[in-house]
Amino acid sequence: MPKRPTGQFSAASMADIAFLLLIFFLVATTMDIDTGLSRQMPPYNPDQEESKDQIKERNVYVVLINSSDQILVEGIPMDVHKLRENAKEFIVNPTNKDNLPEKRPTEIDYFGEVMVSKGIISLQNDRGTSYGMYIKVQNELIAAYNEVRSEVAMQKFGRHYGDLPEDKQDAIKKYYPQIISEAEPKNIGGN
Amino acid sequence: MAKFERKGKGGLQEISTASLPDIVFMLLFFFMVSTVMRETTLKIEQHLPGATEVKKLERKSLVSYINIGKPKGATFQAMYGTEPRIQLNDAFAKVADIRDYVFAEREKMDENERPLMTVSLKVDDKTKMGIVVDVKQELRKASALKINYSTRKVEAIE
Image (cartoon, rainbow over all chains, first blue to last red; front, top):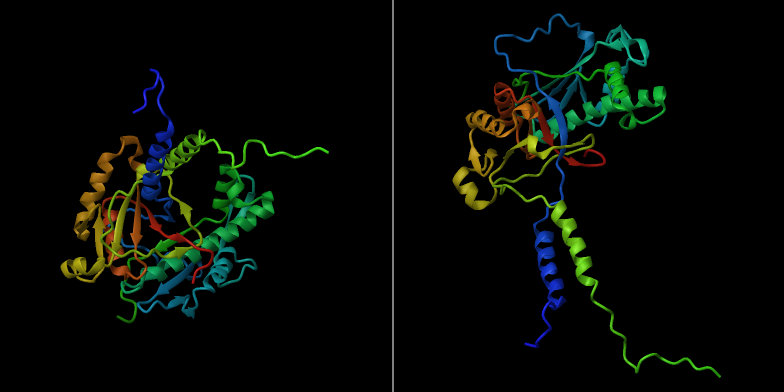
């Protein structure tokens, strides 16, 4: 070994050490950030039967998925790709049709008194439905809400929904409340 | 006439490698900071479904995971069959175990953060809804009501 004056050392191996560590962290890294669809479930209450009978039929948008992943919307078979447009029409009810949900006047910040739909979406699936299909339907229903919300954000505030401050987002959430109710699954047709 | 002369006496000049450690250290720190170590080994097959309306899951410390899918590989399939199973942490579990798991996870959290607990369901897209529904019912009984269906981000659904 060559003798060095005290207080000095070779920095040549520093790069090797750093490379070693770097390669370890490169291999051990997983960069994926978890993403997903967030939902809030209702509290468990076995005594209380769901009382659907007070809600008028026109206010409920029934989506059924059977065990062979077919969709029935309001009694009509539908392709999953058409679901979004159809759900949007139900949520907005632009021409106040008789068979689409009623509206009631509500006071909302920034909007004043506006007519807010009473519509709720009821999603029912079979125990044999595939999870992939279930997520697709959930996704389309959430997408329908997101689209109408961003349309009204554009109209009212001239900005995208995601860019708005929280209080304005809350106002829009009240304008188009997202109500997706999930009934307990039954065996609806097929095995 | 002026001549252009090569500096030095032929051969290439060496590049100083003194700054190499600095560059490497910079990269090293970047990866150290961004690394998330895998906590559990998956014993199930898991191909997550795609969705367009996804949101990022923030605050990892508030999230507990439930994995559902077919046992992976021949060894696990020989032991546990090919029907979808639930995996909690590192072990296969039954639907009845979920409540204890939720309570145990909740116990680990700060008291003021417990209401914010989210359960992330990482379910293979070929799984039937039956087992997912059972899990959701159990979660409701354990009052873990905030759930997140883990999905990949895609541009359009198939």
